[in-house]
Length: 391
Figure 1: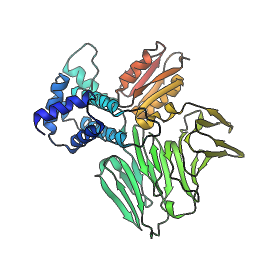
Figure 2: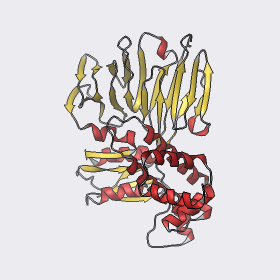
Figure 3: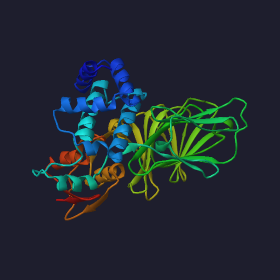
Figure 4: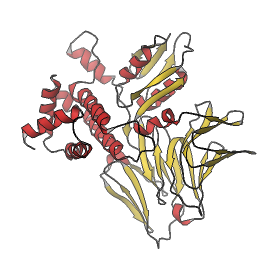
């Protein structure tokens, strides 16, 4: 692009004035890497803020920036169940990301010296990224963030590929014999990923989670997966082959529907939330059928209960948002800890305040903590990768 056109388009994009089609085109152009140095120069002009040239060469900063573009691209192409994002809002988030990534990752506290900036950079708490590890049946592990888009593996009629918008895709030839064993898609803290299983089912995997599924997934009588952590499922309809999710002593059986399962071991209960269709949840000798807008919870005593809920905060993470809805401080901090890969330490009496509100998971952790501090119920101190929660 000529400089003038690129500058004009960048300004429109940051202010949310591009059409959705033009936003997609501009985002694809950014991802292509063309005119990168010119773009950096224009970002400096648009933001009217000096850019630390050494910072622009920092591999960690560039990796986070590149990953952020991937996440934005994935968000724009994600099929929505209930959308909290408009393309204009995505553009606004992109502007924030550009500002954070290029104008500096340190926190200004009134001082302005090189040593202070360097110290803060070394203690950087970065938002999570779109990444995961795929473990094949033979034990080989593939770090999806580190490989190029395109085909990853092909064996016995099964092709595995990675798309440009961060989707792991399985394709099975109609004459495939399949194979024995399982594959596992897993994320660490601060990672999230999306997979399209051979039957067309799509799964969004949250941080510190794993999904185990057989290679012969589409060739056996039933579709069965094992989940640890949290995932959102959009199950492809197939009346002849029920879809079963096993998670922490609970089984969820569906034919085709949209639902979220939270089975983190540090949560007080295992929760299944239904958005569309119907599911059957069973544990021990208990069995419940959920309707849209209902949530089942299985507590540590093995008691299975059902309640009506607002589904928006529950699936907000699939849209790269934190959304709190009368959450206590421990629930809030568990979500923050998983995404920003930090340790949480409580000092003094814990607040009994309930928190509500939403903020992008792209935001610097200090912005998230500031939102919570504005309630007047809690205060935070950051030391390295540890967050101290104070009265």
